[in-house]
Length: 428
View 1 (cartoon, helix red, strand yellow):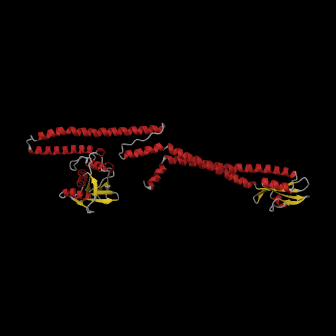
View 2 (cartoon, helix red, strand yellow):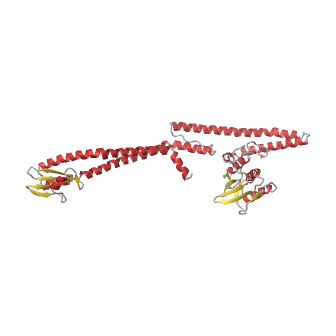
View 3 (cartoon, helix red, strand yellow):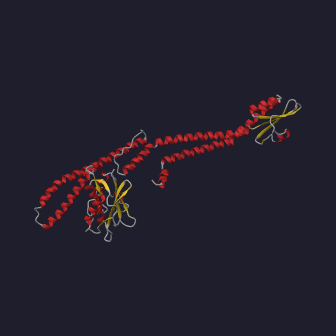
């Protein structure tokens, strides 16, 4: 899958949409918590704490604490004290402002500190300074951080739950893809009794019915082919008694076509599931030359593209000869009056042997490309005798190639015509 196709798939995924909804909800919740803490809770708490601290400092001042007592309070509560009065002057910290400076900043903060100035019972004055704003600022950061951490934990947990919950949907998607590629031996596992489980059961039943229908169709074709052999044989005997030579010739031609079709049908069924294949090591280049020589007298003829003189591969020689012949017949059939010779070649590509048959005909329409290897499919939908065949040649070729563990595909050429590419595994 290309990067563009993957991005399109991700954007259209239900799972992606659900995750996006969760992230949006988490972001909205975080913004609401931040707004609540910064705009309401913080100012309210600061005002309340300032009132409590002022009251506490006033109570402390009434006890006329000494330097040692003020030092102890400062270490315990992080409150610094300056005293000026009849008992002298002292400060628990060097950078405390004078009483006059503290009075100017008593209603606010200065250098990150809050100040409170109050009188002592002996006529002196105390200045108390604290930095609760820093602690509150830290608390304001910690609360959203903790909320963000909790939200992230919930999102990741929900992500895992959603992946597990939507796993049957992905299995169904994979099953549909394999079914569209012709794999009928697919059974999607069922892991729940919910709607996804019901959908899985319906899908598996559908696959079973399709298999039964195809099996019944193939069995019908096989039975009809077998049953036709006896009357065809009797007709051939009766044909010898026909006196009119022209009528006898036409009937003989029709009988030959019928025998060919019956033979192809039986061959098509024998190749099911790779049966009837007996491989030996053969030179596929020599095989191409042998089959191509049969078309020297048929325009536009066949040319073997020279590569290496020998490419060995394990094949059923007679069956692979049928594949090459069917592909060349198809290429010759659809060649145009001005077409160049059909080209056939064999090359080694990594761990595979590639056989390519290239014609100079009209090419294959995109509409017909997916059905090209289906039984009885013909590009000429009028099924005219001018183009011949019964639509089984490419199907038989595909079944033979797959029985060898290979693949066959069709593609249009850059300028004109089409190419059929057979890929076979190299011998071990």
